[in-house]
Image (cartoon, rainbow, N blue to C red; front, side, top):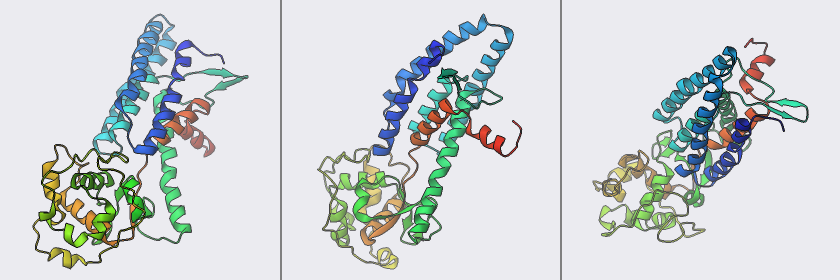
Length: 337
């Protein structure tokens, strides 16, 4: 393989993003320290290539500066805007900021007579190519959910974003509940917040279902609650939550719940008041309604969400090999770029 040393060093991003993608699938969490080495490398390469550009011909210098301006002046702020509006999570935002700093210009590799990437773009900012590739790859996920639900005969207004999940899988599932006692919607509780509540209270989901009538009473809350953790799968301080049986649903209507006489059914508000950090933006109403659904339904609609670093990793691989998917698609459609 023939390439400049900076471009060869940029290949180190592939195993790092591959590991992060795997970890994102397993736990929906990626430690901040994952990005420190690549961030440090990005700074070194920016200084290195900036120094080289200062002594390069004017055209090469302008191309380098254009790539840096687009990457750090457009892509990085755009990523922060996406994160601000919760289009993706904090780990995704940090990963994209690293991409913006590490890939301001297109790398070039000579492999077996081929020059990679094959498809470039007019602006020449490699980070923008990775971003658009990620969006295109990520768009395939809701399509796959729709096809899966269609083939299974599960029709719902959330079939593009959700899948039906048995209650037994909820303790190890990631995502957001798409149901409330009033029906299917997009404002359900985050499943990490449910795990936090169960750990704080010291019960499993199976016990909650079996003792639903009793545990709705906030008077049954523990005097000395357990640490709620951050809701990650496999971090229960009281042992595993996975329960194969023993959860008989207690059927109660919404009206029955509303007339229970408790000011704080399930102790949802007490839980949120007691913990020293938020529960992923969960409100007491969301948590209360989510627990009611999980206590009474055998299957629920869940939005698994997109572990966004996975399409980012795929988008990165495609960018290194093919280049800009959007430019290729527009080219096939006959749109000039």
